[in-house]
Amino acid sequence: MSAITLRKALGVLAKSSSFSVTTVTHRQKDEFDQLKEQLFVKQEIETELQRYLDVAKPGEIIFLCGSSGDGKSEILTRCQSDPRYQRRFSFHLDATHSFAPRQSAIDALNDLFANHHQQSSPLLIGINTGMLANFAREGAECHQAIRSAIDSFLSAQQDASRPYRKENCSFFDFEHYPKFQFNENKNYSSFIKALLDNLTRDDDNNLFQFIFRRDESVNPDLKEVANFKLLCIPGVQNVLITQLFKARLIKDQFVTTRTLLDFLHHLLMGPGYLFDNLFTGAENDLIKKVSDFDPARLHTYELDQFVLRYELGLVDAELDDFLAALESLHIKFDRQCVKPGDATSLIRLFWLLQHESLGNDYHRRFSAFFNESLFERYSEIWHLHRNYTADPEQKRSLNRFYAFELIAGIQRYANRKAPELSMQKEEFFLGEFGGVKITAPVEVKPDWDAIRNKHTAHPTGFDVYLKVGQNPLPHIHIGLNLFELLDKLNNGYRPNKYDKNAIVLLDEIVELIAEQAKSSSEIKFYDGRQRVYRAKADDDMITISGMEG
Image (cartoon, rainbow, N blue to C red):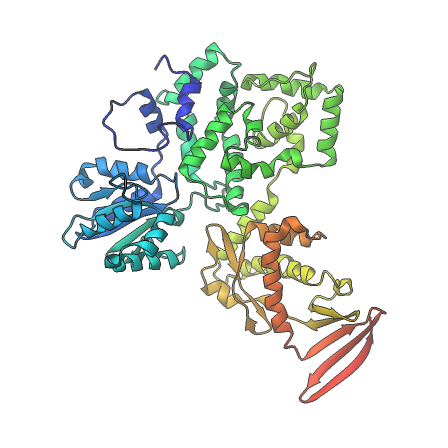
């Protein structure tokens, strides 16, 4: 172990490392294998798979499916080397591979299933979801029963019971075991937290810590030493996990084990300090998504003033004291020789340390600008939906969201072309013809029965249920993007082309409500000259009346 530097040790995290994919091997294990094993966190999907394998029957086919890099080969290699399963199961570790140079992966699966029958050992297959779909479409006719089972699995809802079972096929899907979860204690990923703990835990059995301490004592100025020390701080880990969860919710970025390890490798081994590496590095998928959350893009008066004062070299004794305290983390900023981007880097560092105390806590004077209040509000509403039992206090809290955030935001968007309606709480803009704006009264309200009886909370969002009058609308999925847009609308924001994904959803909601509004027995006409006319249908008569605008 003495010859391994921290740089080399952290190399096992990189996706380019030979350790990024686990295969069956008979070579002698070395220190790098020990380092990789140190990182191991048993996932829930592996626990449930092993529980299922213990009772699997002859003839069964068990698919472990997901996307590239999520850990299928890692799990199956462990199962294959486990004495409990070695002789009881047949294994096909990677269904993207074939058994011969001129054989396709589909042909390999056809052969595999052709040799499998009801008395065979259970068959355990690692397969990408895309390849699963390809086999359902292109597999041999003689395997129609298996292809049909795959089709059923692919069309099933994500909330289906785990594992999904059809005929003699069972499907364990990584999509059904999310790495993130809404948590009232703000612990949004127990998996990532455990992985970071294995990497940074300060005890004598942690090989990474052992190597880090030695490098720190010999060469504390190395960037990887400073970055590793920073990553050991719990508050820093929590901020990073929150950003990854936001990337999952806002950018629909699926986080696999391999991309996560490569992300950590970039944070630690990138060209700069961790807080800069987090927002620069186009070759890493997660960095590309997280970079949109760069706190340096915030332009409050206070932050802009800090940048200006720092770059002008104005006297700030408290900042000097804070920078001196930073040296305990091996992070150095030279105020006598200010480099372009130093102020930006410091804002990122203030943000990263927002939950931690350091020196005179100079960084905490900016914490109010870094809070995740919108994200935390989203999590709160998610929990209210998941736990809803019609308790009066729950109902009051949820009704505040429906009335003052959801319905108010929808109405503001629907009526954005009719400022005359800004004070009309239950009118809905239908269109404009010849300069006359047409509206209808609409009563939009929560569908409390559906909220109580339906499954409303999902890993990446929640469903809302509304009624127009007494007519229920189809459920509406509220992701963080749409939630954020509604919040902005309620604060006077006017949407633009960058909101297009959330706008599409909002347009669909407005169209659903407008269709109901068109059947109203009453409509109003705003002629643009402060005159309003009301048309009301009563049996076969239509009454027109004028009123002041």
